Image 1 (cartoon, rainbow, N blue to C red):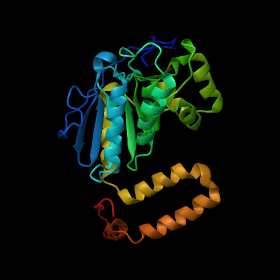
Image 2: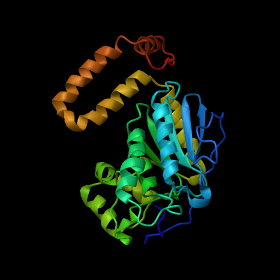
Image 3: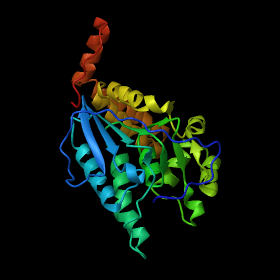
Image 4: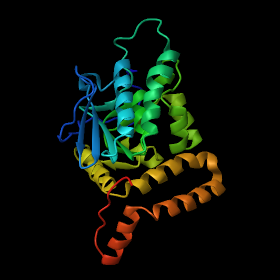
Length: 288
């Protein structure tokens, strides 16, 4: 949902982050897709592409993204996913310009928005959000559903639902307490105040901060470094971190032992050991 700008502290004008071109991939959506995609050396860059609406997403856009994430989950050529926005925003929320009065908000979330966010969060590949400008509503959910969040200095994060008499959605009640203290998560919900880039880094809402003009290059550099790494090991560890919430320490220790034993028999492990002994950079093959 696109919202009026909430009250903010020390607000700065948003600057556009430039997105470099890459080898195009076929688009699943024919007419004016809500996103652009490009695969470059194992990194799939997904750029939300509604700059005139601050990349606010209509329901069909969410469905298209859900189909994309479902496809990506089965594609071993994709070794890291990088999500960013075009223009002056990452994603300002849901586009309500085509909303129907009296629509069933619960059904839209349950049937449209939530499946897309779950598919993103459950991707086996490493995921990285490069947040330029506003990330609110669905945009906040997309960013926090990624494994890592990088932000431009102009980035702005908010839960403006307090101004509307509504509740935070898009997984915010799950993601925020895992990145912020409970008290700061409550404050963000209760006030609707904007958290800008520098403060977001200090609070742990984002992992890295970059000048606007350097954000995408820095994020792509890390994404390529990840894509060059041992994918079987990365996927196993991502799954274990997700499962650690329910496994407890004893369960995690047991899973670590099992995973380590399985990885010891993979080509990537053999290559890693050989490269270490030869004092050269490893050349990992990818999924075993």
